[in-house]
Image (cartoon, rainbow, N blue to C red; front, side, top):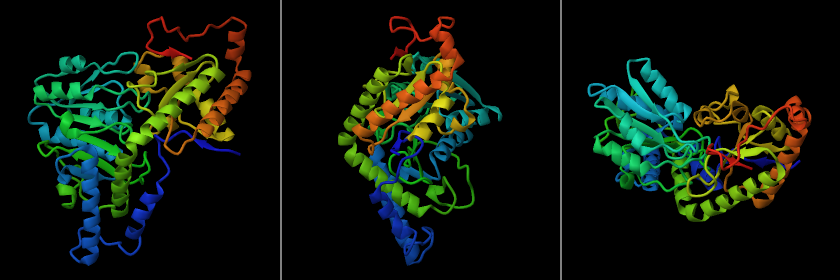
Length: 411
């Protein structure tokens, strides 16, 4: 049976060059990067080279502004909690949007239990953050603004530079979660005036176990893990040298191939949406249309009269791997907070599926996956009492037409 993987945002296959670069540091170059002997020196040099590659990838002014962690989630926690603890003498207020990643919202909820305050700024029906709303939410007590570059659920690209200018004018650091953007959108932390930025490499051909945090040298940050001087004293613990080496290779490849890779994947994204639109009636795209407002590898769709969990499981049995929301929440099978913030009808939110593409996908795979998806939906609707009621006219569709004020598109 053919299999097609359309869940690259949860993880992606490791690139052969990355695996090969990591191999020696599992075997003969096994030294601890903190050791003073030759084995340690080889590991330390490898970490330094990876740090320099990541710094170049994000446009940092110095490799010393890169902190390696165990994951993107840890990087987010370090950025948010570390900033809050180090700045508590100045204020206790943080500004985020309503549609941040669970790593961000979880960190904020932890801070709120410890006396901090947070304003959650709303978004428009496409998931866009209004920079003016960020400005209005800030107070004299604001110590951090935290937003994402591209949304993890619906792919919306945010106006990071405008938000950065607003935060800078008030002397407030800006943290950007680039989990869904890294390798798909250009990142230049210096040009955009960012204080902190995080991402993980396993979403674009790198290994799990390596997270990245960029910290501008002027940004105050309290360590969350103590017991060693690794990572400039910001993250104690023996470095995961193989994963860090893999991270350095993954970002080097991502930066070098971006100009060719992104248009190719964007074409597949458009092809997939067109095939799904043609094959599945009563389907809706959530978030912006493919183009300059949406990251090139993301499609979030709602299929009416069929729940997302049923779609996911049936597609998996048919050979197509997709997600039902972000991987950090998918096992809970709850309605996505992002779709809820958009004001999406509950039935459509329950029927949502997230498809994320990677450079390994082909046009033939896309066509086969779309056709398989259409057959799965037809089968599931054939077992749905709600579909029968709709067919008989007893239930109406909640999908609105484009001329109605919804911010979503009918497919």
